[in-house]
Amino acid sequence: MWNTAFLGVVHPDVQYVFDEVHHRDQGAFAVVGGIHDPDQRAAQRYATAEGVPTYISAAELLVQASVAVVDRLYLDRGQVVIDTLNAGAHLPADKPICTALDGLAEIEQTTLATGKAVNLMLEKRGYPRAVAAQQLVEWRELGDVVGSISTSPHGMKYADRSVGFLNVKNYGGIGNDLTMHDLDGALFCGAISAAQTGPPPGHGSTVVYGSVTLVIPGAIVTSEVSWLTPAAAELHGDYRMCLTGTNGSAETFWAGSGSTRVFHEVPLSRWTVPHRRSTAGFRDQQPAPCGHGLSSTLPAWRCGPNSPRGQGGMEQPW
Image (cartoon, rainbow, N blue to C red; front, side, top):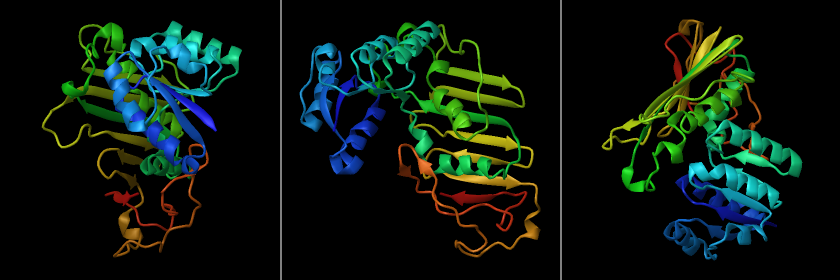
């Protein structure tokens, strides 16, 4: 059983890991060993819910840990990751894993030296609509993917942010944070295989809006992000991503119930559209693996040559 330490509980997405610890193999896979965070009130809130102790010293908690979840203040994460690896623990870390390129280089070197595993908590990969988009690329429904463009507006939610959250030194810039899911989505869906970019925009005094564009042979990937969603908006962020290919495009909506909408150059009149949802006209496919042995909830349907589709697009909820 994996003894799991939590080094920081800054971002609420850390709850995904607590849930995974309890639900994987009915709780027989891992156990929460303890929680450390410089913010003692935040640490105690999670510790009370989990029924585990808090630790003033991260080093003391790491002594007994086989896995450590890193969710500290962004500026601190790089060093915490290195300390965790040197202590002999594997780790998943919230994104971004660090705020500077030299810190990333040191993490890479330490990972190789220790042989421990480092992962980012990119949970959007497990969303059924992400798996749907990935399969559309795999099945070459879109032809050759030549571009991906996404928009990720976020609500600021000042009351939920730690003091100094958007301080440039602590935060590292909006391009270092909010673009991660979008760029990873393009990688995960197979739209791009590798890319390099310069320092992300959003540094300096303006950290509420940013855009990153990756230009690689054969494709362009753009991610536009902001903290400007109005507080009164129904959704925290109306995220969406569009993959454009030589034969068509697929638009994925992350917020709400989510769906993947497919547009294709084949005229709709050439296909029979069923009056109700059924598996008729679809080819059966096995559910795709999602993460470490998990199965996706994507229905075993494929938008194949016998399926209804057309220039006007057909929405396929997943």
